[in-house]
Image 1 (cartoon, rainbow, N blue to C red):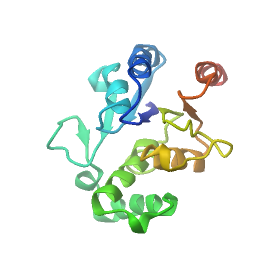
Image 2: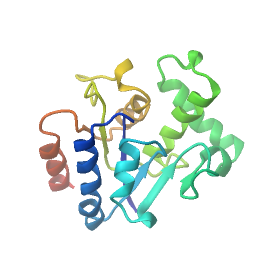
Image 3: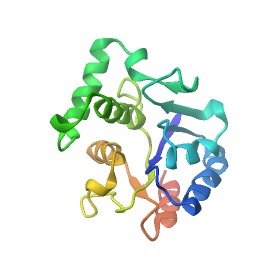
Image 4: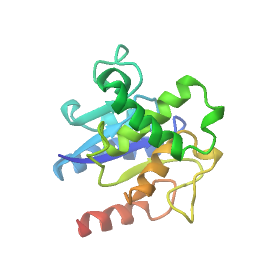
Length: 179
């Protein structure tokens, strides 16, 4: 399967969320499956554009939404610790995060690399207020939790396209042309 990660801020503007949803059928025709979280805003907008069977939604409580894959419930404790170790290594202030925040940051690793860290997304498409997407536009406090997914993607040479930045759609088309 071919995956892309679609994530972003809960405060993603409505106009951008409409674009995220509209991209679903286009990406499906290109063979993509979506990996995302179970959050309002960008995650929900991406998921709304896809057929349910093409959405892999990673959250921390599968009881709320039957489509949600909860890494802590699905993986062995050793596998979860491996994902959590990667999350810890990428987060700038892991020690200040509570248990819930750590679980959210850990599930972001699965969104980008798959449950066993062996099925990486082809690209990460997002919206954050600061436009973070590269070393020249790094994550900041304003990036929020999406920053963890962006840092993971960058570490693994997965292209990041932030819809906050001018020219994002051209970069997405260029990515399609090159693959």
